[in-house]
Image 1 (cartoon, rainbow, N blue to C red):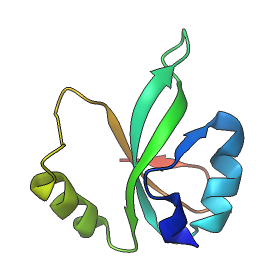
Image 2: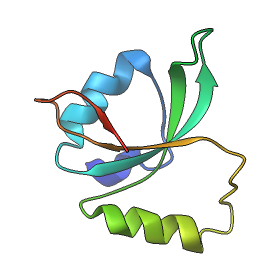
Image 3: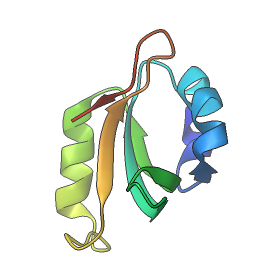
Length: 85
């Protein structure tokens, strides 16, 4: 089920479901849109993995990676607040 989220576009109302269905995974989220306060409102799941280092590898090996884009690296745990690293 978790791989079905790769490249999926999600908005804020879908975040809780995303966390529940991908619990225990690190998510690399590309910020597509923000509100006037700078809070992300629309995101793309660039990749997800149990091991955070795999996402770092993905960033270094992906030809589409662009440092101008904005990304969040978060651990999906529906029982705890979102941890942004």
